[in-house]
Image (cartoon, each protein chain N blue to C red):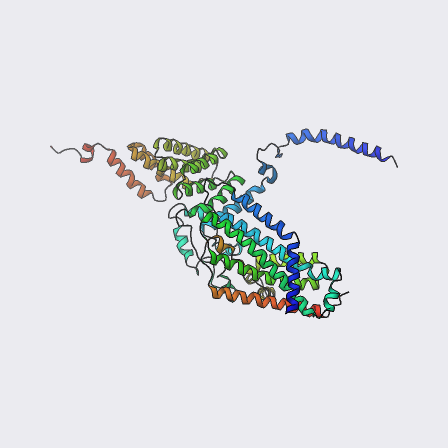
Length: 293
Length: 258
């Protein structure tokens, strides 16, 4: 058997040769995470998205003060709805339905243990409705955004609660800008940013610019992808039409409403609004009609 | 009874001589304070995430201490051969089991008082309110849950060969019950016979430790539980603890010590 020192030297040489070959290959490999500036990205890779979803659900659990279906209950009764609750009345019907325990995700107790155990966990449907309570969901949204910066829903939901319920407009704007940097093509974030400028900053000029940019992004993306997110388009067009009407640019408001009519589920209502605006836009003589001789 | 209390006092003294509790408490405090120092959107009144993390750490620490302390009691006495002089005194095997149980359970109670005091201070410093009734119920139910755990680990210590295997099996079973216990009836409904009956039988037979986990109620500031319900849960835990202790005594009374 050769001397151990010779074997050791041979192994060292092999290792060194392999290293000189592997190092340049690894540097140029597309899957390398070493280039990433974020420590989380390097350590966790794509598994961050899984965790981010978990924390997003956690925020929803907090929104319902712990009353939330387990994976077993979700088989029979659907998914979270914190995001829909933010958009005014969309989630109301669902919430009214769930408020009744018998028809909510908790079925009637199956046995005495089931009945007894309901005293020990939140078994009544509630929301964070007291002033300032909404702040409790924010840590989970922040963590979810850190873990998955490309989930635009996280930014818009957090911004909504920050500015509408906690009066933290600066923080909402900062968070949305952070989301915009991570997702430069997101029309959802631009829509929410426009609302910050319009509703909180009272700055219609910037709101218009942001919404118009969002509209362009939406058209660019819908041209690229077959699937269209008409909901955000409707919201953006509605806000733009309102803004232009308020600013006195009635023809522009009409043009936005015309576009809205093509995607809205209520085209007749939109048409009525268009008619009203056209009447307002017409000169008084045109409204009255020509005088009879 | 005096004999059992004398053994129990030795077990309690053992707890504060060992480093387990101090290490776990310092870790819990450090992690909680570290998490509390995080700034989310310049809002220093956010507290529920902190309460949740702190309570989770308390549960992990308490379970580790309860199982770890109990699992080594009788095997250590055997290994050191101190069990022979102990039983040579007028102490029966039943008193030994009762004493070991009492000692471990009281030690867990002391540990819980310290942990929950810390939790209360941290919550009050952020929330500026002291939900004394809820915190007391959480501590009380947690302590009674640990009575079942301690009795279960004591039974394991006379059944399994080594404390390590006993502790591992106990922790797996306890975690299984905590995570799945509440849903076993739903699982059973999805299964065909005879598995349906088997799973339902397990559901009714196992101690539902998850009943005593009221962390969600405490974290989200729900009203305290009805005291009668709390009393019912106490009786439920007591019944299971007595059952496991009786089983331990049955196994231990005819077991050769050498």
